[in-house]
Amino acid sequence: MFSITILLIGFSRQARTGDLLDDREIKDQNAPHVIMNTISSPMRALIGITGEFEPGARAGRPWNKNELLCYYAEAVARAGGAAVMLPLADPDTCAAVLGRLDGLVLSGGKGDIPPEAYGETAHPSTRPLAAERWRSECLWLRTARSLGKPILGICLGMQVLTVEAGGRLIQDIPDLRPGALPHTSPTGMEQHDVVLTPDTCLAAMAPDNRVQVTSSHHQSIVDVPPGYRLAATSEDGLIEAVESPSATLIIGVQWHPERSLNQPDWLLVEFVKHCGIIG
Image 1: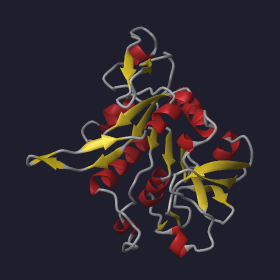
Image 2: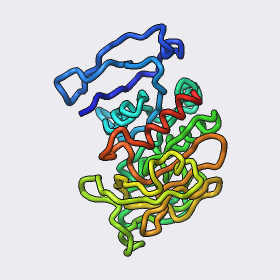
Image 3: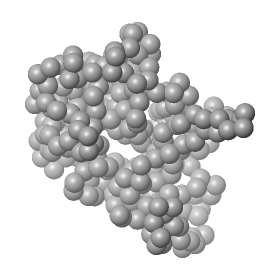
Image 4: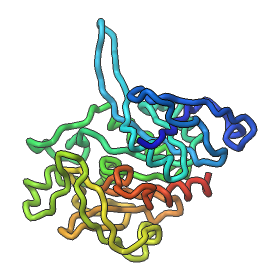
């Protein structure tokens, strides 16, 4: 596997600009070998990535944990950035954390947004996220937006952008859109094309107006939410990407660029580049 760059957030921006750089080595817990230096370039944009939340208890005490597939950090590193895994958002520290980062990625996840968040009852296939994660994603999103930080929503992250803005979701594509293409598979690596909407930020970033993407979702958004515009669709008509027309770059994609068969992925390269310029 490619090396992972995960940085702790307890450092100053001065350290990032090259004055206090230590080439400390990290080991992957699942691999016996050293995978890379903590900081390989002083000018890498710092990208915060939200993680899964798994509630638990042990000996009568909370035993919660956050986790993140290594693909995210690896893909951000390949794209020229440095990944910072984010815990649940804390209202008292959220702005301080984001103030030290150059961009935010709202990651995918194992669960679905609670249907009551968009005024519906649960479909039999819906597996609601822990309420803590749903609230956390919204807080990271709102705080980053208020600070003018670039934001990329991936799969579930795009759905967070949508529902937070007042949009709705198709709760199960195979059941509710029976003519749709396959958008997921047991491997989590379903491949299909998306068509980019002309004259959008996403289209300007892409290598072509039609691109192949890696997909793994059973839900999708119903329509473009208020405050956003259409950025891509699949051949079956489902919405695959939205973006904000505001000056701040905010893009949501229904696919998984971090799992792309071709790394570094073009979208992550452009997002990290933009974060580096703005940051």
